[in-house]
Length: 277
Image (spheres, rainbow, N blue to C red):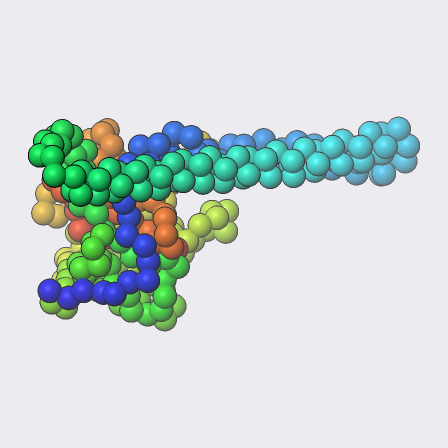
């Protein structure tokens, strides 16, 4: 079985739990709604300033200039503070996960070194039925490997130079799916996922992926046609099927992870996973 000696750190079970359950609840990225409100306030203050200049009214011009300066300062302070808070929260919980992992290792070592036969409590694994796939981030070139958490190759991905087509192969280099860009990233969207993509298995189109506009959070729909019709929705980093959360995609250790229930996995989801940058 092919294996990659990856320079990336192995994801611990504690880090995995934090990324899957904790970070989505405490980290709040900027939304289009918030940016839209800020843009509206800035536009209105500029409008007052322009009106004051055109009408040659000093009081209105002064009011517009003051309002525009206040809106700019408010935006810089608000967005900077939110970014700093998100960064601090993420570092804090990940550091806690690292310390828990070290404590667990020390405890196991102490038990192993002692000659006492102590039965370890059985704790159910919340990820027992999950599939975990990792790929480097950012994309290192026109060919990269997707591995499991132990570095065993699951897929190889070939990328076209202009990044409008991805060919996914298994570890034995048999074709799995091909992803083709139908519509590029819109100028309004800040991100690395094209506006629309089609997923093929051989000559057959098995799914279509599309970005959807949403004021609250980024949204991607995955409509699968084969082997049976089904639909997935990705909101922020969460993957939903039939209204239930079945997986997530998250970043850590310079890697992007696809963490999903095995029964809910569909090859079309590889289209989102390999195209994200």
